[in-house]
Image (cartoon, rainbow, N blue to C red):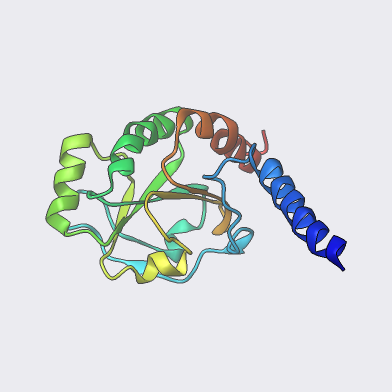
Length: 178
């Protein structure tokens, strides 16, 4: 009985160490979403007033691959990621749609005026309902949606040069059959 009381915690500790050791190489920004390989949720978002791009809806995601980025002006990592989104759009030519998450319109406009607007469409999600439907639990988050409107990739947190090179560009190439 005493041996079992000593061995059981050691076995549990070894199991936990094994789980953590196997997880070390994983990118914490790559989160397997339950929405992967499923159609994007049904939604319709109004445009951000004062910005010369339209809002968008589920139907807008049909027809060609689209990168959907959830951002907010108050999000410091969004600011760091912004130039990478601009470069990614220039490099790939992929449509880039933004979901402006829980942000006063004047702040979102100032953010885009300062940093530039890489988005082809921006939908305002003031009450966070659409973000919740997309499974967003923080900003920034980025999704890749195929031409049929199916979510094929999700990245949590700010994109980095490494995550773009190792994950996003291969996911885009796979969609394009390259």
